[in-house]
Image 1 (cartoon, rainbow, N blue to C red):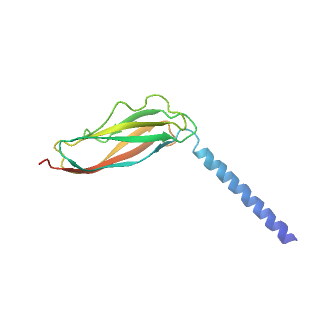
Image 2: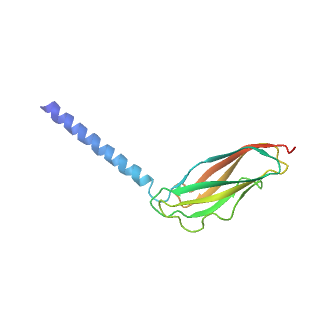
Image 3: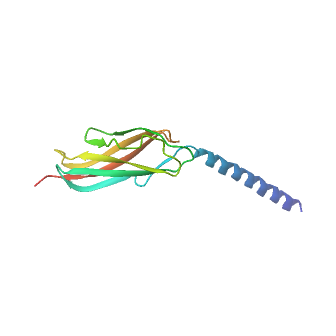
Length: 137
């Protein structure tokens, strides 16, 4: 009988600790959370001098409005369209921004990061574009 009671007390304590862990985990993701459909967009093989534009799509999977304060490319060859959402993005709502890679005089492979700064629980997020520019014929 004492073993059964001790076992029940152990199980109750274990369940209590796990419930607290779950509660802490839920609190850890409260606020705005930016979740991308793709964190890397592969341009594949592209021809030098061609116009290259791709779209990153994301959703606010958090519990508070998401506000993006800036989106910056790694260098001058990577530009971000000015059309990214400037207003708050409600929980569950989506947004997007376009990235252009300048292929002029840039033959070879590339892997460039784009840095998104916001009020999300992780305030700085990186996504990447990559590909290979082949010489124009």
